[in-house]
Length: 321
Image (cartoon, rainbow, N blue to C red; front, side):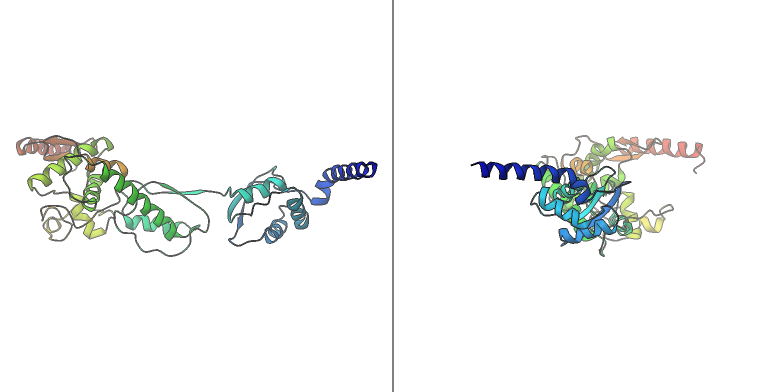
């Protein structure tokens, strides 16, 4: 019994000495400023420790590994980019690697950004990898998305498209009885027009109601962005629309056809999609700019013509005509 007690005491003393000597024997972390540290997929703890030592973040790879065996958990390290910050201990570094607490970066797709510009934005992000084609128009849900260094562009596009598919399906399930389209694809197409034609966010419901009214009575939608889209694929036209372009016959121009274009003309946001699924009830069929960024809406051609005259007069006063 005494012998067993002596062994226990000795072990306790040795552990105490080990803890006291740990900073010297096992080495210290040396993080002077916040620094990103990348762990490639498939890395071993040994290779990570060696990379830490080579970068000067720790004094000893062997000491880091010994500390990990003595005091660390059995959880595997995760791949990704991690932030090493001043004051971090080796234990905290190991815990961060095991928890997968990676640096998150973000890319924002604004409401109404066409797919060609989404493609340009993703291709310009140097921390993403791989080539992608221009996503299908209307397939991207505008939002802010997190990504990691080295993530593929294709996987990020897939995430954006999955978000659109999910939101569109959710809203379709909640569509109102006064909806003017018969399929989700048509709803997406109409929402893209509403997105481009809404001068201010507060108008989305009114604009959705107006175009829904036009669809119901068989009027041409006459939405200027549908003239521009087949010319620029969503990029700014940079000039006024020509008369020949207004009269052009194609699958998008709603000045030369009744009904919806063949597909979306941009990536509409949540609010425009929701507005189309439950359009505002009113009798408006016409709208024209009011000079404040928004529109004046009218139910009759007489009221519309008077509003157009006011708009022209305002432009003349501004020297725009």
